[in-house]
Every structure is written in structure tokens, then in C-alpha cells.
Image (cartoon, rainbow over all chains, first blue to last red):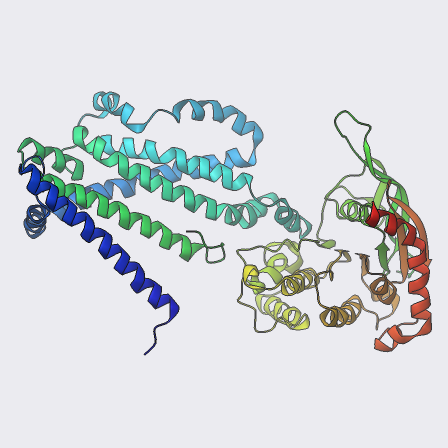
Length: 259
Length: 272
């Protein structure tokens, strides 16, 4: 049976992907043979074995679930704060003029820079990583919302006005849906930065999670375990990105397709 | 209401734009026109003559810098559901399907407030059918051709049943056949088979003179730089107008006459 063009592309993509991974694994294995120091660089087979053990014991998934849960919570808090604020900033120049200087002052400070202070404030626990991730995700979501609201086509607002919609209706029926694609792009960025911040904040500030596990096994010089958790961080980051893209496609089937 | 009631009145309307370091640009200058209740008024003129500005002022989306604009003798202060607008760029909501776009004003605006959900859906379905979009109800604007989008915009305007229809080159993107069909439909929706007192009021902008002659009761001819009303031509062609109208010698004569009024300027605008 002949394959559809789409199916053929998918198979082709998978082959390219597999080939790339194979080249990477072989190169890794070769370098590990050459350095011959399993603490510095274990072979990919050792890492795979360690990953299998950690998966069987369940620790891999336990720690991943903790970190993932923290990220979801952080994104929820960041969205709940940044989306209404961004909407208000996008709609009102006056409000933006009041808020923007503070935002622009805080934005260049990376979430990680707050970790020492957050240790004083919150101590080690759940609050610190959630605070850091919320902080990190807040700015891209805020700026994406503002940009989305700002970019709403004037003629769509005018069309709604000529149909007699009140201001409230124009915000909920025109501005918000029109800004949604931009907001979803911002959310994707928010997920990426929040997930990047998870490791740094858990390395120091949490008694659990993937970042904590990386640090724990590093102290024990168990490099294959360290690398297993690092691989898990990459894998979950990849899956989350795919999840947000799927969300975009589901929520905005009308938007032009993006890469 | 008698047929001679003034629905819309433009008196000495002017629109200037500030241009940095230069004298103000004059888009429209001293434009006075009374549009009667139930009248089909078509505005023609070369591009850049301020046709769209006049329409936007009537819609309340733009404010005049001189003169007064009234509807039913009340000043126009902003847009309202009594004046439906069909925009040149269609202004369709990309997140709404054809059905959602056509029903937008009925659902979220005051136009459908007195209708039951069933009556609303009935009117939406009927209007979609009217413009020949049956079967495309669930498509999004980006999945439609330019001509189909224009029909959605037309359906959205008609579905709200506003008192006044303000239309900015509404049929420009259509192929000749669809255009002819929709001209007929437009006259039907407007109410050419009904007595003049039961008709809606239409202000229609076009650059196609034959379209103007087919549709209009009166044709306002504008000139550019600055945008001024040159003259108003009465259109005596009998109603209801049909395909036979297009073949009348009077029809051709009127097209020629209006063309002669704007020919010099159209050439200048094109060559310059």
C-alpha cells in the first residue's frame, strides 16, 4: 500500500532522528573508551543500565513527578498573575506607564540570582523552587500577553464596535481571543525558562526533585545516576514543549501554523 | 415615515490630518449630503478621494474635523448597531467559523437580544444560505478564498439587520458572476420589491461605475485632492432592476455619463 506524503515524512523524520542519536551515542561511547574514567564520563551503556535501575526502583519517576508538579504549579501561579496584568497593560497606556518601569527593572535579573535571598526567606523546601520558577516564567508570559493585546487588529475591534458590543464584550470576545496565539507562544517560552530554573533551584534549595537528585548522586560520585537524571530533565522539557504545542493546536485551530 | 425623511445628514464635513512639518493634509473638504430614509446611495470617485473617510465618519469610527454628521437628526458620536459596516478588508474574526462570524453580532451584540436561540440560529443559517456559503459553515476564514471571505462579511452585515448599511467596496474581490448574483441579492435584502418606506438605507462605495448604476437611487461623484463632492446624479432606471436592466440603452448611457465626470481625474490619478 502506498504511503501518504504525511506518513512518509513522519517515517523519514524518525529515521533522521534515529541516525542522529546513533551517531551521538557512538561518539559518546568512543570518547568514554578513550578517557577511560567512569566517574568523569561513563559509557552510554552504563548510563542506560543506571537508568534502568532507577526506573525499576521508581526513584527516577518519583523525583521527576516532584519537579514536574512544581513546574505546573509555578506556571499556574505565573499565568494567574501575568495574564491579567498583561491584559491591563496592553489595554491601558496609563497603566502600562505605571507598571512598566518596575517590570523592566526586574526582568533582566535571572531567577537564579534570587536563590540566596530566597533561601533566607523560605528556607529549603517546596516554596523556594516554586518561587524561583514562578519568577522566571512570569516575565515571558507577561510580555507575550502585552504584545498580543497590542497587536490586535484595530479593524476587528472596530467591527465589534459597529455591532454594538460594549467595552467588556470587546475585551472578552475580540481582544482576548485575538491575543491567544501570542499568549500561547509566551506560555511555551515560560515553560522553557521555568524548567531551566527547576534544576538550579532544586540543586540548592529543595530536599527533593530532579535537581536535588543530580546533586545527591554527584556527591556520591555516581556519575551514571547523575546523567540519568540529567537525561530525564531533557526528556521532560521536550515533552512539555510538545504538550504546549499540542495545546496551541487544540485551542487555536484557526491560527496560521507555526514551526 | 415618508420616503423623503432625511436619515443621514452630512453638513460641511471636513477631515484634516496633521502632517509633521507640512500644512495639514485635507482628506475631505466641505462635504454636504443628505441621505434619505430607504435610499440606496452609491459613492464613486477616484482612489484617494476620501470615500472611505466619509463612510467612517458616518459609521462613527472616525470624527470629522469640521461640520456636523447626524442620524435621525441626532449627532453621530460613535459607532452603533443602527449602522452596520462592511469593511474593505472584511475584518472577519479569524477564531470564529463562518457560522460564528455571521452570528457574532446576534450573539454578543444587541441585534439578537430580542431573538430566541432558535430564531437566531434560523436567521444565521438563512443568511449563510443567501450568500451561497451553505456547506462552509464550519470553516475558518483562513480556509476560504477572498471571494468567500467577502461573502461572509456581507452575511455578517445582513444578519444583524441594521437600519443603515455602510459598505466599503463590498463586492470588489468577487469574480464577475458572483458579483452579479450578489448585486441582485443585495437589492433584494435592501428591499427593492418593497415600498420605499420599508427599505433600509444603504451607503455603498465602489469604483465600478456599472455597479453604481445598477444599484443606486442616486450616485454621489467625488473628486480627489481634496476630497469633495463633485455632483450628485439621479438614477431614473426603474425598479425592480434585473438582468434586463443591464441591457437597457439608458443603463449604458448613464455609465458613460458618470465615466465622463470622473475620467479626467481617474486618468490623472492613474498616470501620476
